[in-house]
Length: 235
Image 1 (spheres, helix red, strand yellow):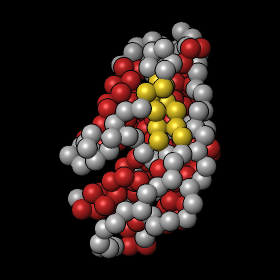
Image 2 (cartoon, rainbow, N blue to C red; image 1 turned 180 degrees about the vertical axis):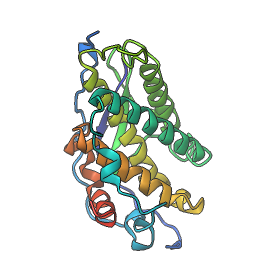
Image 3 (cartoon, rainbow, N blue to C red; image 1 turned 135 degrees about the vertical axis):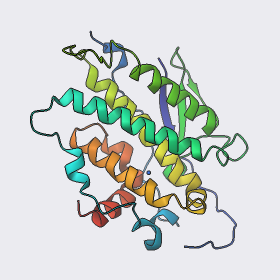
Image 4 (cartoon, rainbow, N blue to C red; image 1 turned 120 degrees about the vertical axis):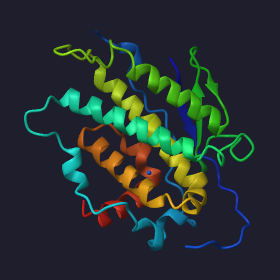
């Protein structure tokens, strides 16, 4: 089974013109290998008021995230996990022309943390962002279509260890979003997709925290963005 690791590096200054101001599975248990520190203060265009305040609609994100009365929690997590995967995969695909082996020879996140993939033998692999994304999405797709992990039959129980797999999926999806914000936010703005990204991201994080699917140590580098978006959504 693949995995991921991350290590922080110092972000190089970017020289550019100022531009206009989302059965039992013990072997799959989540391990937090994220060792980066919270990045130092620097320019983060996704925090600029003209961008961070934009969203696709004025919706109640909290209500969209909490478990509806009478619904099974595992079913609710499963349906939302599938929806988040589809939307984030679609969003990532829309930016694929900007995220190439040339522009992103390594996979970077906030504070220039580098994400590593782990192969079947547990060996850390440094790879380009497109390859890392392909590994991530393929791994998640495989889990979501595995009837022993995400059963679709009526009355079929979810396996023990199910929550650990959902946590792992959320970890990978968070890192995908983190890379988009850190490395491709100007591309997102150019395509006028930042309201969609903001809405998707705050919904994803709110849901993840509602069901304890995201570790604070992992989300810390984007905590400034999370806090600001939550404020705008009155969360």
